[in-house]
Image (cartoon, rainbow, N blue to C red):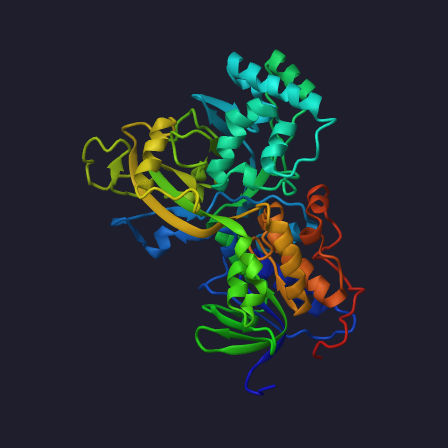
Amino acid sequence: MNPQIPRYDVVVIGGGPTGLGAAKRLNQLVRHLVSRKILDMTLMETGKTPEPRQLGALREDFKRRGLVVDLHHQRGLVDYGGHVVFSHYKFFDECLDEALPREQDWCRHQRISYIRFKDRWVPYPFQNNLSALSVDDQVTCLGGLIDAAAQAKTAPKPKTFDEWMLLNLGEGIADCFMRPYTWKVWATRPTKMQCAWLGERVPAPDAKKAATNVLKGVVQGNWGPNATFRFPSAGGTGHIWEAVASTLPQDRLHYNKTISSVDEDQKFVTFEDGEVVQYGHLITTMPLDILVSKMKHADRYSTCRRLAYSSTNVVLVGIRGTRPDAIGSTCWFYFSEDNCPFYRATVFSNYAPGNVPTPSTKLPTIRLADNSRLPDPTPRAGPYWSLLLEVSESVEKPASPSLLEDCIQGLLNTGLLGAEDEIVSLFHKRCHHGHPTPNLERDSVLNEVLPALRDLNIYSRGRFGSWKYEVSNQDHSFMLGVEAVDNILFGATELSLLYPDVVNGRSNNERTLQIGTMKQTAPNGFRV
């Protein structure tokens, strides 16, 4: 070994949830290992601060950074995606509570969400609330659901998402909502997607209960793990991970570090600034396809080219005026129809008051929503509210060159904006890796590549590191890093990676941040 090249027992690449989860667990174990062995670790992050890069949920603070977007000086806050905090894990909750311990650090919400369908607002999820449809659409959807229930006992196990839809929801719901919505959010067809990922993501309704709800005019809400959630009172999603990073030894965190190459033979990581470090184990959160392209023997992992993903275009629209009563405290809306390019619109100002400027802030009007006339350029006070839109993009479904204009027109078409509404801010960010698509080839690729990398002491984990959408929320991503550390040190099973349905179907309370003495000891081979 070259004595001038620093060596670390564990090198963590990425300062988002997965990387910080790994660093948090390593730091905890260093302090509590019975043997008091010290693990030498470091975390490298490509950005200037720790933010959830692999989640596509980066934050931009226009007011602080003074960004200029589309030639207009903007004020406000935007997350790179409509992400909120809910959890399946005690350890994750405790780490966030330690980082942001005060009740006033959080805004807590009961989810209120709707689907726009034929000029109606249907409560989410669509298949559980057929009573909100017209009679003709109720007949279509219920008929398909009843037919599917009758065929389910003898039908073969579905292999694609489309087959799953027909077996569990029926042709009516599939055609009315699920197929067009899948195209809008995933930018691919459900016939090209597998169905093993579904779990808690898509509810399969009971035909008898659905019919009863229609006859009684009942709507059914509060389904799913995000029925209640929390969001930071200030600073957006990025503030969570800055706060978590602040609980770690700062001399172990290094920023502005971008990987140039990985030599898996000598266990060297080279960065674009020329620095080289050697690792005992490497936990990397960069997208798997990018990781293998930087490895010395990249040709051995050519199957990663069969992995699929979509990009996400995030558009923030800031509006002067009082939020419409019709929107109220709604959290977000889903859109499956072709009268708007976005698949989801989040009422971002409802998440936290700090997401928009104070009412006394004076801002000029960029344009009216319908652009029918030039606005008065004089800066004026608020109040303000904001909408965060998400538009998918892929090779199959390229984005329109007039995306911003199409989004504003879509807001007019769907009734979220009025013609005379004053737009004071516009922001657009394209997140290259937006959603890891569970395509038909995914599992065969992951089952080959991830174990092969682990045999080389390389743990590719995170939303795109392990490429499993079913365990890609913030809590999952954090725990993928935690569990990778436990596997390295103790050989513990990585439940979140290997058994998503298990961790998503229960409360995972095995780990806790508040421990007295750890029973585990580090294995031989780690530097004292």
